[in-house]
Amino acid sequence: MITEELIWQALQNVLDPEIGLSVVDMGLIYEVKVKDEGKVYVKMTLTVPGCPMHALIAQNVKNEVEKLEGVKEAEVELTFDPPWTPERMSEALRKRFGYA
Image (cartoon, rainbow, N blue to C red; front, side, top):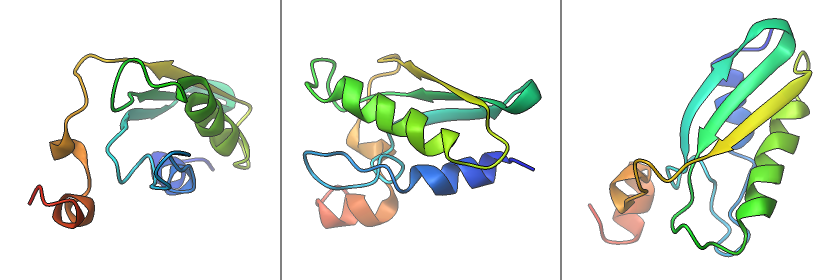
């Protein structure tokens, strides 16, 4: 059975191609929902609205979720509301980059 926890774990495998860090650790994933009939919804953001890698990162999120057994379809919504801030990063990354 697919769970939100499994999806979050899978999303740890999605890296920002420019800096090589997990989209989860960077705080780019805002929401994960398991819907009916194997459908999954992921709401995410990027560090800046003009990110040239936006399509690739969103597609990688979709692909990683759809690899999970029981997932038939993943919908990825990209939003900039609220905007991303460094406070959304994991504690380890905030310390690494001097935000903690």
